[in-house]
Length: 173
Image 1 (cartoon, rainbow, N blue to C red):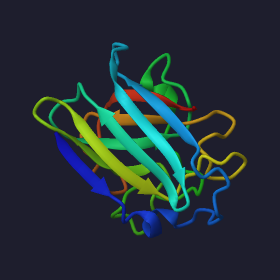
Image 2 (cartoon, rainbow, N blue to C red):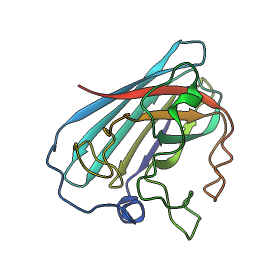
Image 3 (cartoon, one colour):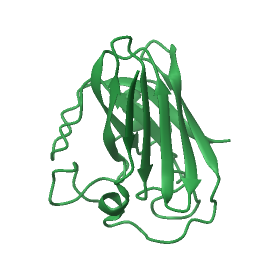
């Protein structure tokens, strides 16, 4: 299994976002990932820390290689994954780590599946929070979802990550 650990995102993703100390340190949420046919594909766990939200993914059933991995604006995967909307972007900034105009709060590094289609990744982002009533909260009026795309994100202004291969609604637990 390919293991990807990226934690140097704090400063880059905090651009344009509120910088307040989280109140719900230790709070957790999950996104049960499903494929287009409704099959279970694993779990993404989100944990509020003092330094941001730790996003831990353990999924399978993916095509080998890189996949775009994003938080999307609407907490639904039905009737199709398009219902999850665009990337989570409360700061109304550009897309992509290579975009000088900024990075969406929902932009996360690509996730990589091994030859068996399994992927494990840990990312820390200060661009989102599990706290309620904050502009960068994943629990706004319509919630949020995690989407795994068919192809890797280009990290440019156009994500170029292709179709949506898996979706999970982010829910507190």
